[in-house]
Image 1 (cartoon, protein in one colour):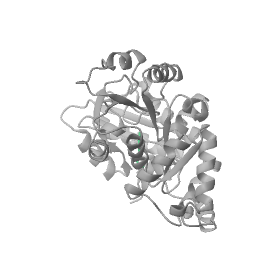
Image 2 (cartoon, protein in one colour; image 1 turned 120 degrees about the vertical axis):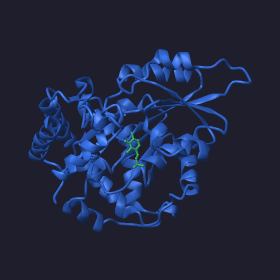
Image 3 (tube, helix red, strand yellow; image 1 turned 135 degrees about the vertical axis):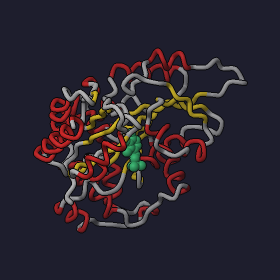
Image 4 (cartoon, helix red, strand yellow; image 1 turned 30 degrees about the horizontal axis):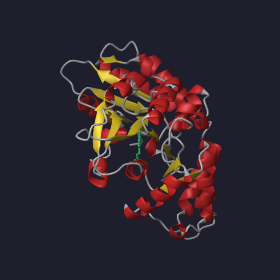
Length: 344
Ligand SMILES: *Cc1c(COP(=O)(O)O)cnc(C)c1O
């Protein structure tokens, strides 16, 4: 069966043109820093985000965890949003790899306010944990692809600077935030010390993320990438896919946002699901199943039998993610099937 796969934008596959670019990539040993394609990717990403340096990593998780390791000491406290990827979907990596205490703060639509951050600051007494890092997510995955407002980000960054706290932005989908708002990724990056970006989601490259920051942090990050097993050799073959995606696929993310907007409109009057239209900002649609006597998992199973794949986020929520490998027609057909299943 050919599925309309809306589980995640990670399911995108490299196009023939991207594969051709990968096949032709010049390569070298990146552990020696000698892979010209990786070096070009790192320079490109650093410059796009207006930071001094960047480090290519095999996954977004590794980039996030390296950022935590490079900016904390064991026993430090790291403020995270309660529904964030770092807190929910990265095993207990921060506890194991960095020995830090994650302090979850519940945001609204995944956005914590500067007031919440202020209230979370601890008195500098020796028996309190020392807060050294704040992690924010833009766009916010679990909240439904919501964009972190720039003014809130600015406020939080200025509070952090005042208290000698670093800010890490998990910008796996920062590209989407920028396309949705017209605010450049560079402008967002001004208000964070380190940023993770992913090439393997909506951009459509098969593998890879990057961590961006000052030369000093990235130098440390390179050590931790090696320690965590992420030092790779002729990895320019993969970096070439990421470079291709940055060049040709970034602006196309707008189409994915249109697809999700269409789906959210089409489903908004279906009585057995509830959609908070405020969350419909980019390429993700989170729906709460309100139909009696059926779980989100059972709905997903029924949809699968009809050829539509969605992901189950909790016992009552399902998620659809638009990406470049599903067309508007696919999404419209999926919308009809979702309606049919939820109304039967
Ligand atoms: C996907 C994602 C990541 C990283 O995921 P990997 O699968 O490790 O590349 C990090 N943060 C957010 C918000 C994500 O959605």
